[in-house]
Image 1 (cartoon, rainbow, N blue to C red):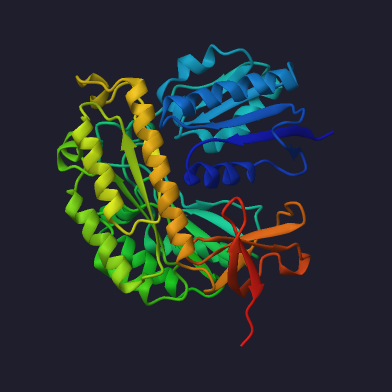
Image 2 (image 1 turned 30 degrees about the horizontal axis):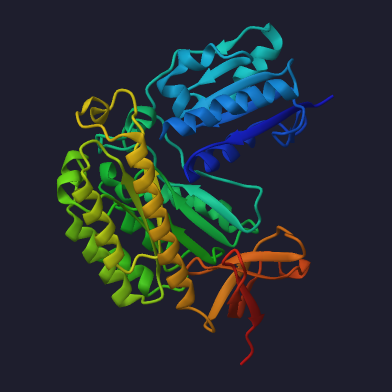
Length: 430
């Protein structure tokens, strides 16, 4: 009888790509993958440590698994495991704890656990290995891991400690993996990593070199570039996207703060004018482009004046929406030892204001595109008789469910938005 295994992933797109790659290592002749809410013999939780809330989700998932099957074995892998393994090992039901260096060997540990009935826990090693990989199981979209780790050590961030130094394969090796995706039914890939703009630096290659290689590859219709640091998002990359039908006009650029004083305290590698210049360059070449920005509110020492400057700066720019993060103390980081920690109630109020600003920005961006002609890649979910998909510039759309449209790219007209802000569409005909 096959053993049942369930996976739960928290955190970034990189984690999702890795979970899929790890799941493929379990032989289908021996394991049956089930939903995490079902009864299983093994529960695998791919953890995140970017905030305290992310770690809380991991602990809640462990309890959920134990309620579903008290006799099950739980494996916790990933960044939370890497940084605080002893904390996780104490939780009832957890029998395997693997950091980022060993998580790809999870099938070996589960096999040993089944034979020896002993906890498959190892010494947590420094993450040093790398192999490009991708998510599978979704015909429409794949997350393609092209880089891992980070050399920046921003004062608020624990990820360099959890994932190690920046590393990637060569352009040639990465393109070989991309060809595997190209030979599948996937229509769109999302390039992911911790700091993907740093790709190839240790090999005298560059992220731009990789983008040029992917541009000419047959079998991939759409490519999205996930988060790239402002100083690494150079004009060559922006111009390549602007002149390409394959690269989507959708950018994700971390801002974190709109004041140079706070950026310096964060040990970011740019000033706000660099971010501003990148945004205006993108919009000059691609007026229809979608630009998302990360922003952290409540960083230690952030005054009302700092916050107001950040809000006003974002308000002045043609940014499409925000990813708002409320500063969360990460043990071991420089920021955790800084004075002038911002009270929680102040952080929450600032977060509320920025979320409202994001909603306003997104509504305005969507409104700019009413009656425009767009190409939508339709996805497979049937939501109350409707299917949804995204335009190249990341506007979410819907139409009546049509099985024949799944995983197809259709030219449509954006008609009007529903109560959730999703665009109704109608077919475009010349």
